Image (cartoon, rainbow, N blue to C red; front, side, top):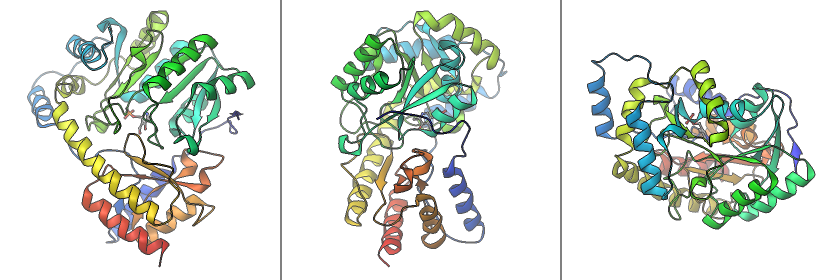
Length: 383
Ligand SMILES: Cc1ncc(COP(=O)(O)O)c(C=O)c1O
């Protein structure tokens, strides 16, 4: 079933409201386990920090609008070595995290008011950015029974009901961690090509696949817009650095928008990011740690009666059905943080229709935080 977004406006990100509530409680001396925000709790790799420290003595002027040549060359090498995909450095733009990449992709590719599809549940900024820029969002529901993975059939059905010009989706996804298989992605790429839909592939959680290597849309096509970021795998959320790879047809227009909207991505972060691409061993250490947290949290939540289809494929989130405990996930999350000291994100952030029955827990924190959170959640649901 496809629904046009039921809202014409922006919505707050409730994770932030829960985070503010948790911080106020901490200020009063309460202890809080933070499972609401999706970011690694550690600094980037030591060599990344060292490179940035060394750069601080030098001027930090604007760079080439598309990013320093070293970073774009290193990214082209990354696609060659990780994905056996040929990407020319000139088709890459360094961005301020993936967030500015979405703005550039929408404005660079589509005309005013175009209809662009996203999944439900999905990352809330997709809907809010589309609304803010005057585009129309079309939601494609994905199913827990299919472990929340988007399929080519979902896309074709949605398009037949209500056509759209673009599709933005993430694999692994937020909030579900769902990752499409290699075959699944090949079918999605082929279906978008058949329907004349421009695919925007958000690959920000690449590297954080627990079932096998991440697969890029660029392995199947040079017609997709690929958006990625150093925020998650490389532990650099606050450095605000990401990149996009663009097909020829939309490259020049997107470059002009980048020049005018953002000038260039942060200089220090571009240099740090170039080093981060070579620091995968450190990123893999963090991933191993998330993988352990994932096993621990998923099995504990299942035992406590939370609805979970299967272990999620990637990212660092568990999206679970809380309908056994509540039909109002926001109030439930407020009570959980107030009474048990565990901050989590209500599903209404990710799904405006059915999100009242779901909650997202992030397992990017330490093992101690996970263990303490599980004990507290158990006390809350089984007093
Ligand atoms: C699916 C997805 N895409 C993009 C972003 C934005 O990340 P950034 O702008 O830090 O790269 C996030 C952040 O949580 C996300 O979950």
